[in-house]
Image (cartoon, rainbow, N blue to C red; front, side):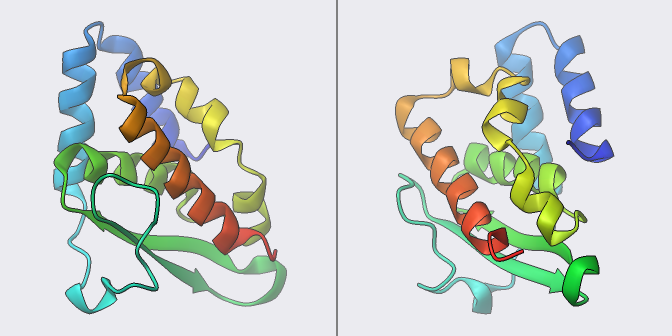
Amino acid sequence: MATARFEEIAETFEFLDDWEDRYRHVIELGRAMPPMDAALKSPATKVEGCASQVWIHPVVEGEGPEARFDFAGDSDAMIVRGLIAVLHALYSGLKLREAAQVDAIAELARLGLDEHLSSQRSNGLRAMVGRIRALTSGA
């Protein structure tokens, strides 16, 4: 269950044969993200388990079963900021219960990220997915 925006990223990845081109695309996605308000970068929003500094701040619009999930995120590493942008594309705008059901690892595997990220980056990506799952699990 991926969003249309994530499907666009997946389609772009299909056309990019070289991993370096994909890597650059992920970085460009990160550069295109709006900056996260510095006031939101706090211990409460920091994602533990990442080699880089990573923050994810949830934004839930609405209440009950129709509540929609979104988040602001940022990192001090450009590739990680790009990974946050990919996760944002995967989750943003879903109903909370839909977001809780996303198999992010399977969706990200479609991009080949699991094969090309360092073990530290892979661990950090799993930590970010874990944070998002924790934020949406009450749905």
